[in-house]
Length: 134
Ligand SMILES: [Zn+2]
Image (tube, rainbow, N blue to C red; front, top):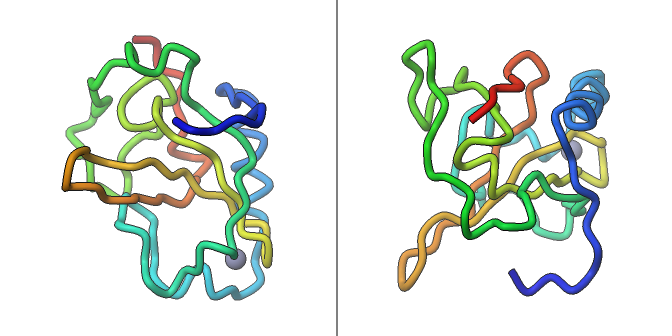
């Protein structure tokens, strides 16, 4: 979507590796001022310049990525404990970002289209990542 640079493509294994590294960060940081444990709109307390894009979870044929969500245990889109399933929505449209101050990692994508656009962000939690096939 307008990106001209080559982006690192994360798969289950590399995302898990990153998540474990991110969870090992214990220092207090302003990126945690507003919790984004589940999906949230980009908080005003989080400056855009504090985040650096590391790569993407989305596949090359993004337009064909399904809008199905993965909730085998009855979670919902907004649930703080909803699984992070890279092949499912919205993870199949996400880019992977890192806080340049502390190294915690986040997923981000833009929800909606037309006049409704919402930039959403969620902290990557290793224990929620599942390698669920479509
Ligand atoms: Zn941070």
